Every structure is written in C-alpha cells, then in structure tokens.
Length: 98
Image: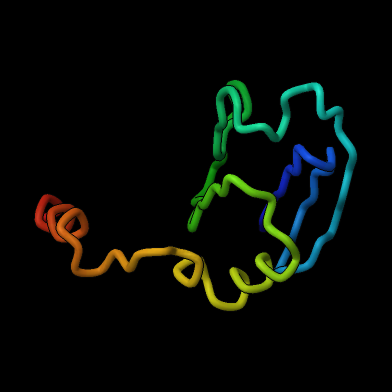
C-alpha cells in the first residue's frame, strides 16, 4: 500500500499492489503534501495501528506510476543511492544489537 500527495497538482492517490486505486483533490493552500508540520505513521490523534508496519519510505517528490511499480516489483533497495551493507553505520548498528 502506498500513498502519494502531490503539492504541485493538489492530488492525493492511494496505490495497492502497484496500481492506483483512488484519487482525490485537495486544497494546495492547506499545506497538505508540502512536507511541513508533523507526520505520523500508524497513528491518528490518539488512535494507533494494532499491527506491524514494514518498509516505510518517504520521498521528497511525488513518484510516478513507473516508480510505484518498480518499488512493488523490486523493493525499496533499487531506489537507494548507496548500498548499506558493509558500511560503518550498518556494522556499528549490528554490533550494538548483540
């Protein structure tokens, strides 16, 4: 499941299994979709998700359909600029978990 808010077009879309399932318009003057303010994952006011949320990613651009499909098919690692394996931070994190 993916959501996209495009502040340039004022469109919010919901994607399921790499296909757009819903679209709505919103007021671009509202600040929604601009990256300003508080952002919660798995929480809405005092209600929390009872479950597991996996593979969360935030982007500073509205991904197009090809990008959404690529993530669906190949996962998020295909979009990262740097491979995390073998890097100092990753190694240190593994050591701290022991």
